[in-house]
Structures are given as structure tokens and as C-alpha cells.
Image (tube, rainbow, N blue to C red; front, side, top):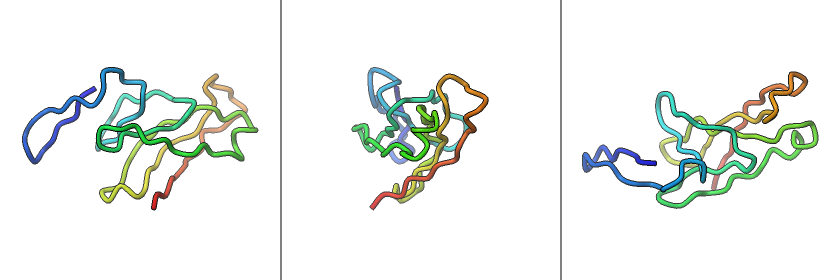
Length: 97
């Protein structure tokens, strides 16, 4: 997995494996649902808490969609990894300190 650093105009390697954590960016990013939500913070995967009330209702996958410019707000979706029609997609926001 690579990311483009606009300041230096170079590509940087982030990780050897794409599924270690998700990378949020403007536009379309090919993220897949993960059982433990994580997002890249620099060169380190940063774990996000699961949406606990929904875990008991069949939510077991998360997709990170966006990270704010100040990196304090992360947004995404919580869903069923089995595409269960009885478990709706839930928008989720993580607020970091």
C-alpha cells in the first residue's frame, strides 16, 4: 500500500499488506470491511473502538471512509460481514482526542 505525499511530490510505502488497516482519502478508496476497525496514522495502524451496541445486533465489519484534516474525526460504516438483510448499514463517527 502506498500513499502520495503532495508536499514532497513522492510516493511513500505505508505497508506491505493492504488489509492491516484502512487508508482514508478523498475520492474512492478500495477499502474492505474489517472485523476490527483500524486506520493508518502516519506509518502505524491505529485501532478504533467497535460500535458496541451494534455488535450484539450482528454488526461485525467496519469500513473507514474519511478522516478530517486535523485527524480528530474519523467517519465510516458499520455493517454485517455476511450481508445480512436484517442488519442495516450504520454510519459511524469516531471522535479522537
